[in-house]
Length: 281
Image (cartoon, rainbow, N blue to C red; front, top):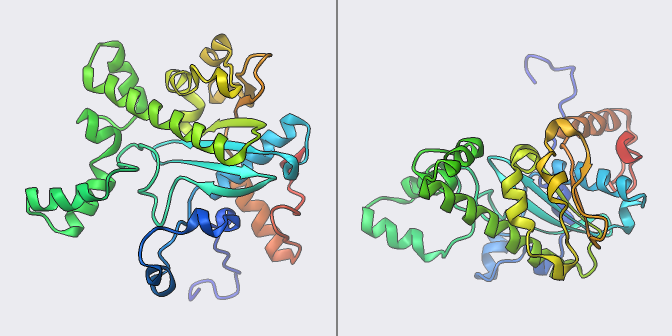
């Protein structure tokens, strides 16, 4: 601001999309004073990505976003999933910080909260070092001991490297569980969307996350899935008889940033449920 005093500064928070969550989704079962005094609650992240792909999925479904129930799966080095009901976020996997939720490249995701306390005693480390371990040395890296990039992991799966196979199975299993949870939360689900680097390109992880879910109305077209990558653009990978559509949609957070900033500077910004983004159709 000192260097460019006459240039407007706009901050875009990827927690904003999740501010529609009800209190029972964002409240933790810890002393309530933690929320009142320290703001301890679920906030969620990757909101701009979830916003973009959910609205693109609604367009592919041929329905207004406010009439759609969608599960969005943002899977990159960081991973988060969101349950979107009638166009707004009602639950999401990341929490107070991005550490909660799915297995990620270097983050542990959901785990027994007593484990860090136990391991601090075993390793004789303090909270700062444990925070580093959980955020930077866990997840896919922690299981494999070598890799965070899923391309490396999948390559070594083909070479029968056991820890890589375990890492893929753990990640896919956790994805499947979140799909089931959010199906229960939403009741009716119109579509599931995979996005971000892994979601758009890791064929095997998508397949393992979606297989054997026919009882939920999810039937994958294996050939379409095998041939779908980021370069494929927006692609449906579900079979014709799948009650729930499954899409791979490359995310475009930058476009949302630009349109939000322009609208704010022009004084025309509205809540995302009302704002006429160019990508709605």
